[in-house]
Length: 118
Image (tube, rainbow, N blue to C red; front, side):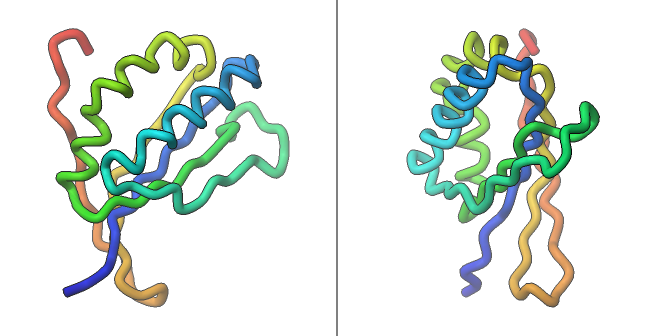
C-alpha cells in the first residue's frame, strides 16, 4: 500500500490587510489536523507582482474523503467574514499524488458539489 498523499495547492492574494491575512492563513491551516491534513509547504512571493499570489499553501491529505471533509468543514464557512477582509482572490488546484519524485503525478479532479448559495 502506498503512503502517497494527495496535495492541494491554495494560491491566495491579500487585500492588503496583512495582519488579517496572516490570521486567516493561521486559522485555515489550523483546521488541517481535523482532516488528517498537513501543511507541506508555504511559499511567499520572491518579487512583488500583482499577478502573483501573496501566499501559496501546499496541503496534503491521505485521501479524497479527507479533502472533502476539509473543503466542506463548517468551520471553514465560519472563516468567511475574515476571508472577506483578508483575501482578495483565491484559487485551489485539483489534487496531485506523486509516489516518487521522479514519476509523473496522478491528477485527482476535485469538484465538491456547490450549494445553491455559492
